[in-house]
Image 1 (cartoon, rainbow, N blue to C red):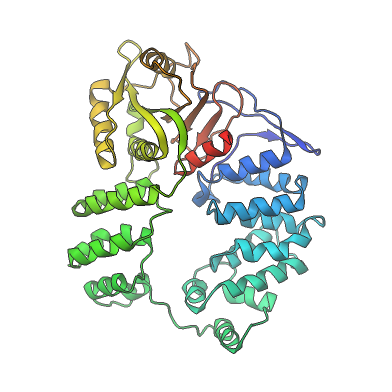
Image 2: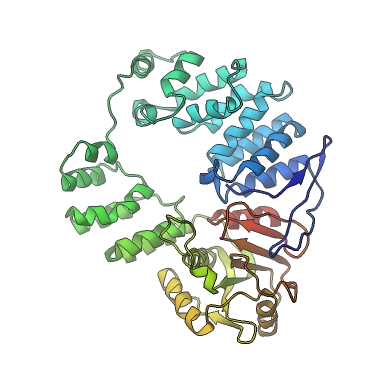
Length: 460
């Protein structure tokens, strides 16, 4: 989940944020009404939503304070959009929790919860958020909403998450809200959940933990379509090692719904299972074709400085430059017209070069090849943009700089971007600021296809 730097919230419908721009120059964010700020905060969560409990505290605080300032029906609509359109898991629950805290918003909660709780484990997650400051009685609308949400799930879905090590188990939620079953089958299923006798689901983790034959297990799961897209990609190497037929693996790949996978998922899979690179690339193109495009002409700048060779985290196998290349692959597919530049070097030998627009994994290889002659060094954002300005002979709708914000120009010259819109995406940390006024239209922290959706929301 992304975060916004230190802010000041007022009690009326206007809110101002005190943030910084890349390089630490300290411009101020624009004044916006509460609804606009809530929408931007929610959209920012596209960037690091999986890390909701790691570095997202400041933006969570913002959402907490903004919800009661927004009309109840509007807050509920934002929560529904966050879940059903943007596919966020945690943020819609947080909005629901905050709505339940306020008398003016509480009547909408009973209807909202079954619309945003679409995974069985979210039943427990909602209560964990509701009780994060200590246990309090459940509001009537919360009970109504959670009871109705139970009807979203069948026995397999409930069994899949019933054994997770959570502070609040699914059967605890069931006993608290007492849902009324629609028929005898549903009544029997919920009784099994309450008695902890639901049959163990057929998942790859369960089968392999039992010690089942690995090859037979993978083949059965592929044939029966029991593997999600991300689990499939992460286990390609394990399937190969177990001796699964390659044609069967390819058939399984062709059946996956990869709409919500990220380019980095495909890059990682191809790194560990290069035999299937062609199929992975085809699946990636197919999944990205479903996403909306950014209209106009886009310049995408990739920092290839020395610090971009660092890993994105202590346990990650990805370098920052790998992520930048994956995002360039994404940009090439989702921008109507795009030019990709690589930049690096030193103050005296600074270099920027246009990268050929090769699609897919070929673009990643081209970016890595371009990094060597440019040199490691640092990123000189002002010099880079001035070089590109001289090269480009047509209007530029947007400039997106993908970097780790280690700008070596900042002691001498502030960047002067020349696009109609200008953005910098910082891959180095979870908690850098997002700024809506000053040098950049937005400074975005985090990386996924979410950063392009975030840009689309700003420009819309």
